[in-house]
Image 1 (tube, rainbow, N blue to C red):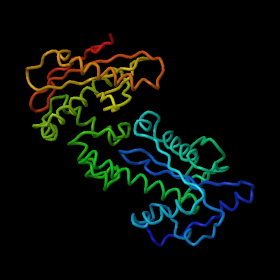
Image 2 (tube, rainbow, N blue to C red):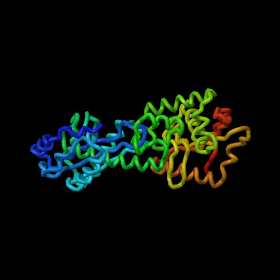
Image 3 (cartoon, rainbow, N blue to C red):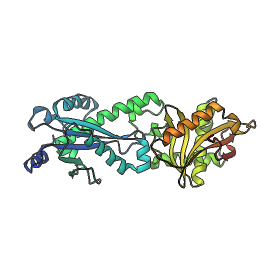
Image 4 (cartoon, rainbow, N blue to C red):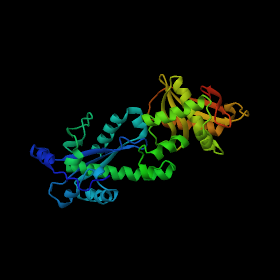
Length: 350
């Protein structure tokens, strides 16, 4: 619960830095390290020279403020400060780099995005590594340092707004309410819906809930939640098949880089790495005995789209070997796996 009675931070560290010859001092704080979904955000704020401005007394750590108070303060911070910025690290970067490195990346981007280049960063928390310029790390800095408190408010309002937008794009998980954190309702939605592209698949609660579900399904256990997600739902059937395909690849030693990669050219179900080769995977899931060869369902138009998506993904990767595979799964009507075929290089380049 917010604590409106908490003491306002005082600009001791800002004044000290200015007295030491630093011209522009930016407070930096992150929001969103702990959620199961959504990016991590970092705010950076350079306060003006008037460290006695009346509105500064209303600043608090963003967690100690009500949503309404944050909504009122954020625009005032942005209007009254010398410079402000938000930096982000995506879910893919979190899963690839780890949350600490991704948080550091978001902080660096926030500092680099300021219209005034700061000489010193005052950063909330314990040391997190090189941020590209001089930095002092302050434990509980968001509660004691006004520039850090301002940064936390700006970042919190920006991230909350994004999660509300994602709630409309990916309904059912309650992102507008839980902001991606692992509430009971959120975990229950994960079990029934599976993850969406904004879920951090490297986070332990997500791995445990999904791995437990997949292991039981692969063993042929009857799962009400699996059957419910698949009944009369091509989306649910596809999600279940993609999860089983992912489990198959991981057991074979593949490293999963991304799931449900989207770009203007289309979507790729899975992107993985095997040795030095990038492997793009189209997953085809069907019920019953009428299976057919998966290559037969890859029309020339679909082939062209898959190759275009792969090439878009590789545009920034340089000259690296790659291929497009197809994984075909046959499930019974209760979602139990009957057959899995992995066709390597099934969608080839001319």
